[in-house]
Amino acid sequence: MNKILLLGCMLAALPAAAQKKAAKPAAKPVAKAVAVSGATVTRVVQTLAADDMQGRGTGQPGGQRAADFLAGEFKRIGLKPLAGQAGFEQKLTVYQSQTGPVGAFINGQALAPAQVVAVSGQPAINWSSEDAQPPTVAVIGAEPVERRKLFGYLNPTANTLVFVDTAQTKAFRQLQGYLGRGTTSAEPPKPFATVFVLGARPATLTYRISANAVVVPVELRNIVGQLPGRDPKRAKENVVFSGHYDHLGILKPTAAGDSIANGADDDASGTTAVVALAEYFKKRNDNARPLIFVAFAAEEVGGFGSQFFSRQLDPAQVTAMFNIEMIGKEAKFGPNTAFITGYERSDFGKLLQANLTGSKFRFEPDPYPEQNLFYRSDNATLARLGVPAHTISTDQIPTDGLYHSVDDEVETLDLTNMTAVIQAIAQSASGIVAGKQTPSRIPPLTDDRN
Image 1 (cartoon, rainbow, N blue to C red):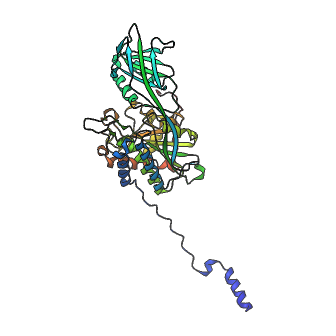
Image 2 (cartoon, rainbow, N blue to C red):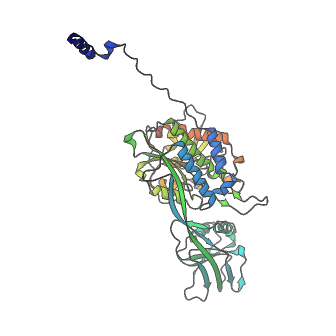
Image 3 (cartoon, one colour):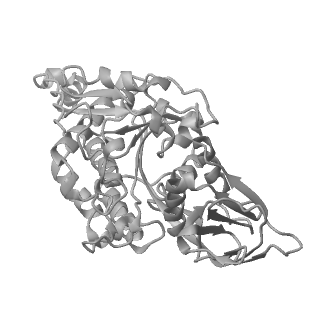
């Protein structure tokens, strides 16, 4: 019995290799090929631009439905909320102001509605040239350079009566359309008003002006989710993919009766890209850097969603921002192309193109510098803070007759080309996502004209 125990102990002490043949090392798993889902692209853009979304207007029921849908998509994909957030909704409050029709008499003559419009942060305007503290009177001249001054009165800090030369009629009509939809601000507006009158200031001036206004706080939601990075050393090197889900909502009916500004290209297309890219990178599951996916509210009324989002981040901890805006149609350079705003401000575009070697796709610099697009989308706030934050687009905006109209419908989009653009963004982002490329920072700017 003791001999048997001794033999057992000796056998137990032998290396496992002496007891059985050495096992072959396990084969490394072959990486599964992943592509952007064309089915997801079609389904999401059709949902966002459907009539029942009512144009996804800021603060409107359709906008809330779009936010709910996108939060559901982030949950389906398996994204995580941002640290400190219970869910995917990042709430912010803005203030919407709506000034009613203006009753105005200048030198005893009543002005037609087409001649006068107002913006007010006070509930009632009751002005008379006989008031002890009458409003300041200003004039916008006929010269083209004067047009810029016109929009400087949209956030009144004093009561002002502005006479606008008839040479600026086109700008005045644009102003009327803008104010007719109401204005939005991040803070409660100051208790002052600006009244704009189309026409020359009389040499002798008397007036009576009245109007009512309403200011309402509105809670909005950015929809934000993330994929945590797999490299702990890169935990503070966030990469942001973004688009805005809001549009204009309900407009004045056309002759055909359509009043829903569906915003299929602007920017259901970009928001769809965010969802499709989140799905793509989740399936890959190999991102070294943390990836943040965000659908912004309130871009169309002043970029308040992206401004709020940017304040929640340390810009030094954002490596890059891929903002995606209007990619539903072929670019002026042809199929399989897109342009990058602010291309010359960092090496972001060159790094993206380097990852497309062997591909038919190419990124081009912004062909419309006169449009100042770099500062007209949700990349602007982080770009001003030094982040290489750029917008990717294909829209031929100077000739796009569907822009901001009820005719921006899914049927006008090229979904095949749109999917190719999203796939190119995914492939071109690979170096940044993997931590192998880091785009140069943008010098912090404060002047939109730079």
